[in-house]
Image (cartoon, rainbow, N blue to C red; front, side, top):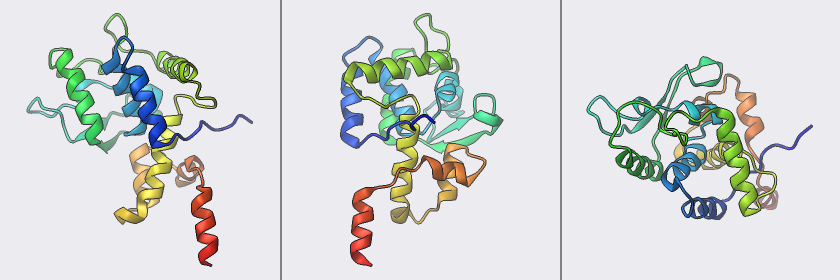
Amino acid sequence: MPQPAKVLGVADVRLLLRHVGTHRHAQRNQAMILLSFKAGLRACEIAGLTWSMVVSANGRLSDIIHISGGIAKNGSPRRIPLHPDLRVTLARLRRAHGQPRDGPVIRSERGAHMTPRSVVNWFATTYAEIGFDGCSSHSGRRTFITRSARLLAKTGGSLRDIQELVGHRDLATTQRYIEGDRDAQRKLISLI
């Protein structure tokens, strides 16, 4: 059975963003990373995301990403609050493309939607370039779910909230994504 994609720390994500910032299509690539790590999107959702899903009726960036059933796994639409870092990156990307209201957010070399396979391959290549073993396009999603679970106590939320954000039908699926924290486990045992 294959190992699950690695969960990355905050410093690792910063390194990843700096690395892609030096390449062609830096804004697009940073948006891909943040859509994965700050919104928990799957590769197929990153590939299928359109500006109409992130732009409100007044033509401004919305506070929410509206994942349509057409791009979501199992056809389950959902709404994800827009993280501030992702908002800034999307605003820059949108300005660079002439403030579109529709069309692909993440564009291929030819200006069309990237395919989900292209997104998966892009992440694999990028992780290989910086020597991150065990990482895949799913690392951002696993990191998003794990970090969200660790922060639940501060928000008053529940695992059900994370389940809805990531579009899982079954709470057990969400729980499988969460990586345990050895330091927290040691602290917990010392308090018993």
